[in-house]
Image 1 (cartoon, rainbow, N blue to C red):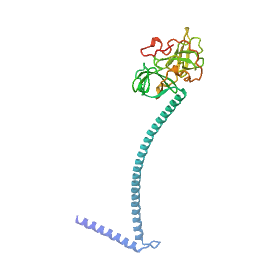
Image 2 (image 1 turned 90 degrees about the vertical axis):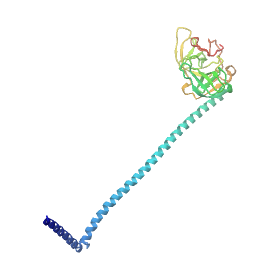
Image 3 (image 1 turned 60 degrees about the vertical axis):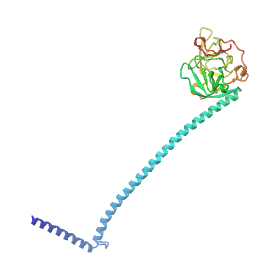
Image 4 (image 1 turned 180 degrees about the vertical axis):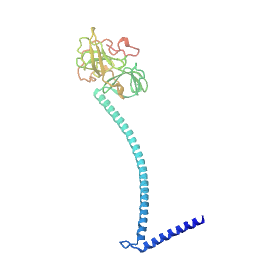
Length: 310
């Protein structure tokens, strides 16, 4: 065992001496460029170490810079997302404001053209029952509202006031099943009664010989004592002629009741405003007797329907 240790030590010593001898020889031997071999080898080794270390440090530095930049980009993206969300909310507000401005401009134009005593009102609620089509407006008796005052919009007739309170009022829409209004066909001057069907309108009590066609415009006749004459009710969609005196006539309302936001309440009576309320600009046709104009047909009449002078 001791002999083996001695041999190993001798081998190590021999290897060390050999390496040292090679180093000494390399230090004395020059390359073709005149640089000692030892210096060239040492420089090459240390250059590789420096290159690897520099590359590693550069990669770490780049990775760190990318990480910091990524964090900044994330913060910037978050800020931009918040800005976009705020701008979208602001855009919606601006659109709502623009729509409200257009509605008010239309109401103002209607008030100027109609030459009627009116008061503007905003819709604050709608009827919960589909059988009774009503809305609530933010004007009441303190603003001069009374029952059976007509309510109109730029598109046409909306309905009538049925229950006013001090600061609000309930309005029965013209499409309510128990609502009615004296009407006439603008083209042929054929008279009848526009009655609500719950979701639309029909034209009743029209003579079977009357000149009525699909596409005709139906306007108020003014004979019901509620609605001023000449305001648009709707457009005839279909005409079915029967064997009797009257035909079944469907009318599409001129007003989109689902998108109403503001209305005008007519403070003057229709009889006092007939001369100036003819929106069609035509002379009044001689009144013909129309059964129960302004009142729903008897089979659908309920308490609260407006009595109307024939």
